[in-house]
Image (cartoon, rainbow, N blue to C red; front, side, top):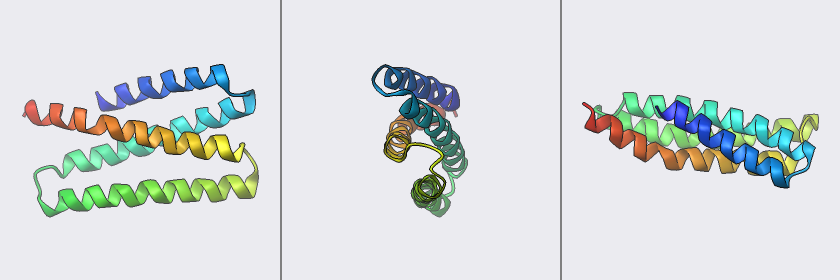
Length: 116
Protein backbone atom coordinates (compact mmCIF):
# COMPACT_ATOMS: atom_id res chain seq x y z
CA UNK A 1 0.00 0.00 0.00
CA UNK A 2 2.84 2.40 0.82
CA UNK A 3 4.47 1.89 -2.56
CA UNK A 4 1.22 2.54 -4.39
CA UNK A 5 0.34 5.63 -2.34
CA UNK A 6 3.88 6.93 -2.78
CA UNK A 7 3.75 6.44 -6.54
CA UNK A 8 0.43 8.29 -6.73
CA UNK A 9 1.78 11.15 -4.58
CA UNK A 10 4.91 11.45 -6.73
CA UNK A 11 2.86 11.41 -9.93
CA UNK A 12 0.48 14.09 -8.66
CA UNK A 13 3.28 16.38 -7.53
CA UNK A 14 5.17 15.82 -10.79
CA UNK A 15 2.04 16.77 -12.74
CA UNK A 16 1.68 19.92 -10.65
CA UNK A 17 5.34 20.78 -11.23
CA UNK A 18 4.80 20.34 -14.97
CA UNK A 19 2.46 23.32 -14.82
CA UNK A 20 5.08 25.69 -13.41
CA UNK A 21 8.50 24.40 -14.47
CA UNK A 22 10.14 24.56 -17.88
CA UNK A 23 10.59 21.29 -19.78
CA UNK A 24 14.13 20.75 -18.50
CA UNK A 25 12.97 21.15 -14.89
CA UNK A 26 10.05 18.79 -15.43
CA UNK A 27 12.39 16.13 -16.79
CA UNK A 28 14.68 16.53 -13.77
CA UNK A 29 11.73 16.40 -11.36
CA UNK A 30 10.38 13.26 -13.01
CA UNK A 31 13.67 11.40 -12.69
CA UNK A 32 14.18 12.55 -9.13
CA UNK A 33 10.63 11.52 -8.22
CA UNK A 34 11.33 8.02 -9.48
CA UNK A 35 14.63 7.88 -7.58
CA UNK A 36 13.06 9.17 -4.36
CA UNK A 37 10.21 6.67 -4.65
CA UNK A 38 12.62 3.73 -5.08
CA UNK A 39 14.78 4.82 -2.13
CA UNK A 40 11.79 5.44 0.13
CA UNK A 41 10.11 2.13 -0.66
CA UNK A 42 13.34 0.28 0.16
CA UNK A 43 13.85 2.22 3.39
CA UNK A 44 10.23 1.72 4.45
CA UNK A 45 10.50 -2.02 3.83
CA UNK A 46 13.64 -2.22 5.97
CA UNK A 47 12.04 -0.20 8.74
CA UNK A 48 8.84 -2.22 8.70
CA UNK A 49 10.74 -5.52 8.71
CA UNK A 50 12.63 -4.48 11.85
CA UNK A 51 9.60 -3.18 13.77
CA UNK A 52 9.64 -5.85 16.50
CA UNK A 53 13.38 -6.14 16.99
CA UNK A 54 14.25 -3.26 19.36
CA UNK A 55 17.73 -2.10 18.45
CA UNK A 56 17.32 -3.22 14.85
CA UNK A 57 14.44 -0.78 14.49
CA UNK A 58 16.59 2.13 15.70
CA UNK A 59 19.40 0.99 13.40
CA UNK A 60 17.00 0.85 10.45
CA UNK A 61 15.69 4.31 11.30
CA UNK A 62 19.19 5.81 11.50
CA UNK A 63 20.44 3.83 8.53
CA UNK A 64 17.54 5.05 6.42
CA UNK A 65 18.44 8.64 7.24
CA UNK A 66 22.06 8.05 6.27
CA UNK A 67 21.04 6.34 3.02
CA UNK A 68 18.76 9.26 2.08
CA UNK A 69 21.57 11.76 2.71
CA UNK A 70 24.04 9.65 0.75
CA UNK A 71 21.61 9.38 -2.17
CA UNK A 72 21.13 13.14 -2.15
CA UNK A 73 24.88 13.77 -2.02
CA UNK A 74 25.74 11.18 -4.68
CA UNK A 75 23.01 12.49 -6.96
CA UNK A 76 24.23 16.07 -6.50
CA UNK A 77 27.77 15.04 -7.35
CA UNK A 78 26.66 13.01 -10.39
CA UNK A 79 24.46 15.78 -11.79
CA UNK A 80 27.14 18.38 -11.17
CA UNK A 81 29.81 16.28 -12.95
CA UNK A 82 27.67 15.06 -15.84
CA UNK A 83 25.31 18.02 -16.36
CA UNK A 84 22.71 15.43 -17.40
CA UNK A 85 19.92 17.31 -15.62
CA UNK A 86 19.34 20.83 -14.42
CA UNK A 87 21.01 20.92 -11.00
CA UNK A 88 18.68 23.13 -8.95
CA UNK A 89 15.36 21.61 -10.05
CA UNK A 90 16.76 18.09 -9.71
CA UNK A 91 18.12 18.50 -6.19
CA UNK A 92 15.16 20.48 -4.90
CA UNK A 93 12.81 17.89 -6.39
CA UNK A 94 14.75 14.99 -4.89
CA UNK A 95 14.80 16.57 -1.44
CA UNK A 96 11.12 17.48 -1.71
CA UNK A 97 10.03 14.05 -2.88
CA UNK A 98 12.07 12.32 -0.17
CA UNK A 99 10.47 14.56 2.45
CA UNK A 100 6.95 14.04 1.08
CA UNK A 101 7.34 10.28 1.04
CA UNK A 102 8.92 10.35 4.49
CA UNK A 103 5.80 12.09 5.79
CA UNK A 104 3.66 9.22 4.47
CA UNK A 105 5.63 6.56 6.35
CA UNK A 106 4.01 6.94 9.80
CA UNK A 107 0.52 6.59 8.36
CA UNK A 108 1.29 3.29 6.70
CA UNK A 109 3.50 2.09 9.52
CA UNK A 110 0.61 2.45 11.96
CA UNK A 111 -1.78 0.79 9.53
CA UNK A 112 0.54 -2.21 9.32
CA UNK A 113 0.85 -2.47 13.09
CA UNK A 114 -2.94 -2.38 13.53
CA UNK A 115 -3.47 -5.18 11.02
CA UNK A 116 -1.24 -7.59 12.96
